[in-house]
Length: 248
Image (tube, rainbow, N blue to C red):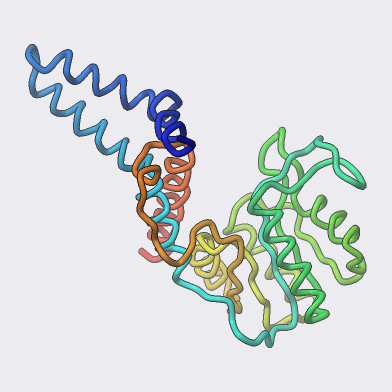
């Protein structure tokens, strides 16, 4: 019963609701304008496929499988990339929180620091007027996790991955770091590595924040449209476009 309810919810909430409405419109205009109906039906089917967990997860998984965490770490600094933050939400020791992926990246970096004792560079600024400054928030939270302030370096100006790489290079050169360990979400790693190479930085890739498992699973709810499925598809397509732009 639980899974049946989840299945039905998929078609009464967006984007499933819009797909149902578009299908009804296709049937309504079929007799009057078959070419338009076929075009609308094709568009609806594409939207449906891109909205399913099956397609969204497959696209994300194809990106996440390109790098694996190394068995041994031989770097001299941990570089963490931001990924969103709120500005004025309450936190334990202040205001502002890192959002999902950024928080996972920060947690992984803190754990790596505890294992290796390596310093941390966090890169990320305030992207939008209503978002938080990621590096400033990250520094406060790292200090709250008992990481010494003198082991934390921040770039609080970067607004995208290209700027992350360029601004981190300035810190690397200033502090004489030579073997950075790059920590970011697994789906974001290839584009990040390419951006750092563009800035003449060779990194040790340490992917974290995995969104999918290694093994694909197919069941009824993977075939229903959902906002999560559509979001994963959008994230993956953005990464592929960025990778293509950097390569070609």
